Image (cartoon, rainbow, N blue to C red; front, side, top):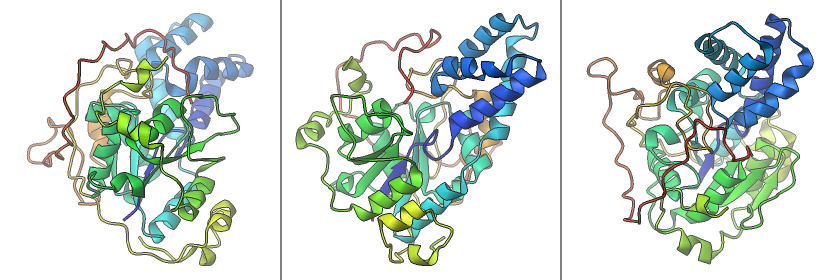
Length: 361
């Protein structure tokens, strides 16, 4: 059964729009210049700059007496209040499900923040499994995180699984480079930007998720990534790339589905996507604002919301994702992860408390 993996922020969810909405509230409540939304959006870096860095800079700029903890709490409430999944994106997922695709989320970021987004937006019941970099202890573009995602969706990452798997995302160094290293085909959501990476390219490009899903459904025969790249990625060494500077009717009967999906492929009804094999996760300790994560991880949240978020995110096996220190008897057994081949030690990760040099994408 084909597998479609999807990035979360700015792919499934318009994260940057939610940030701008929070920034408008932040400025309005403090009688600050509304035009400074652009200043805040710039320092936000698409979510890749630690929250403590963003809010400390705002505190200094405006001479605020509020503590950093108070500003962080305001930010978390605000960003969550504004996050949503557009109806057109949910419709695109239903179309893929109806066509027989298994669906999974692969996200770089803090476990609590990303789980809370999945819970609040209703994405949990729409997918077969998910993996978040913090709890998995690896990040895109590491090929291992895609293997973990496949396994949690009930797809064994063995044999020719990669030839039946696509990755859709907006951040080239994480989503598209990771897909190529793992041997997956990919769709890059360009959001009006030109492609700027000379070393690798996506299989396809799209303006948004509905168009991307339509392209995937119509392109089962599209070429896989270059064999040389796949061979070079076999070791799956963490950080290796960074060293290089529910079934529904057919589309024809769904008037609510985005026109871009319907025009890209006429989808016949398919079997229900396989129920996921995701029975739980192993959560890892996290820093206050996610600032310890490498630069390609989103820094929207912290560990304090992990238990609350996880307790409401069901997976296909009807279990919960919980911290091991939650209520007794509620922690499901962890999913066995693919064994990472032995590799030389990776260089130490940069101090993520400093502003990230990586661009958001």
